[in-house]
Image 1 (cartoon, helix red, strand yellow):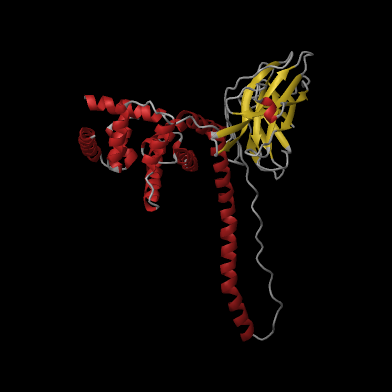
Image 2: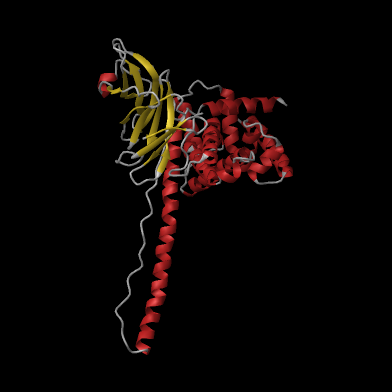
Length: 255
Length: 176
């Protein structure tokens, strides 16, 4: 390799490193796939409607002409019926490390996971929504939601600007059960976001939306006691059913 | 296993879930590289191009993910989408590479070395295909056959284009 090739390689490497890491890339990918899926599902219905319209345009004059030829007149036929396709779904994932300042006596069980992001083009900043779990001094577990600007620690000096994190209790399941609790954590950038907490060895979580379409939740964070899953339902209606499975896809629990 | 949902509302039998996991893994491994590739090829919206490339890959995932053709397909898609974007921008009379590179250098890389700035500018003066060949060769470290596959040209064309690109690059650097 000659000297110019070395220089070129070095320059390209440096140039490539100028590209800052993207945030929420997987979420964006899922959003696009969901849109595409929705379009793909609608396409057959649209094609059916177009085909029906074409058939009607051809058939109606033929029928009219035939009716005029053969005199007895029947009442007009019904319009073609086109049913709406089911709405599609979406699901996303993202990982990030953010500094967390523990409040009095609590300890972090699962690392804060980004479940939503909102980019402000004016000042190129990002407001992130985090989900995490903590263990309280009395031994109880809580599932918490916090918002803060990218790079700012949770419960750090800027936390008050975006409100203190809100937490709700989790309930340890009985033997043979795995479900600790769930909570909606929607944000402007991620509507219909639901967080589920499941005991080990939960590996994947399948959900059914209100319209019975399915989506897979993401395992966002793993703690000593449980796994935190996030599902982007993309609808104001909560999921109506779920099934949690282990890594070999054996069902652990239905709910 | 970090199984990620890929297709909205898709069935999720074991094989489907394997496919999902494989797609998610490839996304994890390759998204940033594809974004950087689009950027080095001169696109002004590398994020969008990388995203779109993965969406298209996903459409063909069942046929591609088992036989190691996914990554070459992805690279080719990024190259094609970058070309389309550059064509579009030429139509609307914008020059994305310079705008973007200048913006980045002004904001984030004021201290960038003179040497790299020179090479960057010289790269910007090359033809589209010459730039593509050099980026694929010297940034992605692809061999000539892989470059040919990515660009949809013969290996001989890659050799000739690389040679011309290096000659032109050298010439532009001397002029600087």
